[in-house]
Length: 172
Image 1 (cartoon, rainbow, N blue to C red):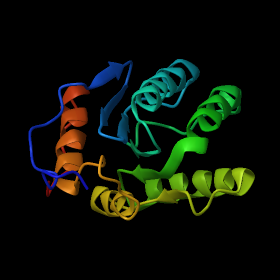
Image 2 (cartoon, helix red, strand yellow):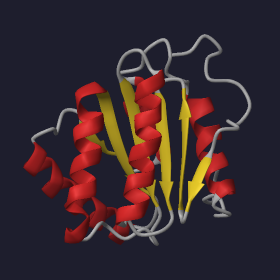
Image 3 (cartoon, helix red, strand yellow):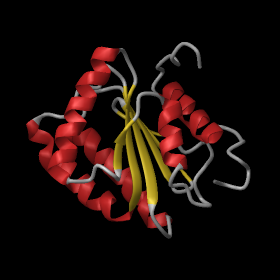
């Protein structure tokens, strides 16, 4: 974990593109999907990841948060998804997907992720969390000196919500 213990202000480097917002902090990438995972949005997030990989000397961690309005990718998006996976996987310590919504949405996302994990064979590297707190804990298990703490990651997620003008979940 970073020396500040994860304390600090929300990050200024939030990047927004048509219903998806991302921010890189240290060696961590957080993305909030409000809109469906379509080709242009996937390419945008892959570009943000590529920029982080260019700056980060070692490996990275990443977490994507999926709102119920962010439907899973269609078959047409396979090429963009593959390109993103091929770029990130060689230098990833952990990739976490967190559906933000009710039990039905969580079940849909878990099913899609389970199928994808089977195809790429990365169940130890790729995880599905049931909440932001669990996601940040999973990232913390593989943190480096460059990985922000849970409080900084939570502030970054709040900033992503703000950037997309999405209300924060109750209880935050």
